[in-house]
Image (cartoon, rainbow, N blue to C red; front, side, top):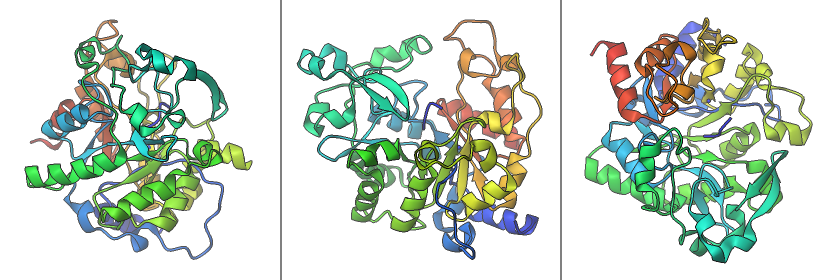
Length: 387
């Protein structure tokens, strides 16, 4: 996930039962045609019903305890009880493979700076309108990236995670799909994953379109159907619309801050902002091609100027009325990431009161949540459900 989630109550409730595991959200440049089949009509329930609610989604794996997007992080997330693992923020290599990194710039998530043979490839690029300096996956072959090792992205907040720096390599999406099958066999229960297409407009402009590559691999492994245990997400609605034409998987549009615009909107000259997309009309538009939204937590409960939670918005009810489910992002245990009224002390690496924050968000009726700390999320859900 990025650094930046109609016809009455009865219909909405029925769809939520069918779709207990999809999320994403943002706007889109192409408008849906009148008479487009609804999310519930085009994507049946299938395996969705097997997912507990609120669903615990391991954000980049158990990234509160291990360097993110590594098999160490993914594996630990399952061990801690995650219902779904966000195994794959997908970015391409120069030779067209899909790898799992938070961003295409990998200076902060790998040890590439310690590789003198790659020093000359450090460069500055404009990524979604923002200058970014570093090393980019699209400038390396897969074989070259496999010589690197993952490191902790936020060591100031997670100094203990640096113990594992250098232990794991960068996984490919194909390796993740195989790992999913292996873990399903070993654990005797279906393992779910939740990959994201990262900066799809940017990569399409480079001739490295993501959606076709994702669809090709899902078809190869028989995971491209409506009941497949793979939920696809993106901050760009047009990426989700393209995936809707290519695969049958549940689809989610990720939604950033209300005053922002998805980059594909910017590129296409679409003036809509996220604020337009979280209106009833905007949510109906999303429901014409997706099954869920993944809003930032601030769209569910805004904060005041001091960073304290205020009153919930109507987003949960409005999205459910449109037949969409909600998986907001991202719950973390450390003080800087929590609402101010749930912090304890000022230390950047100290835990606050995430259980109190989880309860506040669960009480809004969200269908699930992304969390860096799977075990905390599982316990918070048990508390909330009275188990």
